[in-house]
Image (cartoon, rainbow, N blue to C red):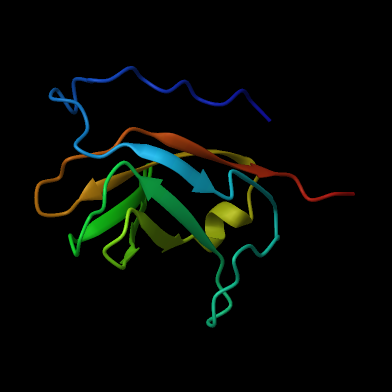
Length: 120
């Protein structure tokens, strides 16, 4: 597996004023191919993301570049949850993600979810 991508310093050209939200913590940080984590009733896996501030009922999305946009579950606290796309869980790699506020398109800082190969 290649080295993880570097996290760009804030602010960036794509987000010149810096993020409105910052990711304080998230989990899982690492999982193995095929491993179910935080199992959901529909059989999917989920991750949690703790932000710097409560987000109320703002419509948020977790974006795994370049093609996954996942609406998050928001309960008014500073922690949100989102389904981990099955395609990411089936391929080892480093998957950068960020949270965006849908109404303003403001982005948080990036973090990286690591998917390791399945054990032999």
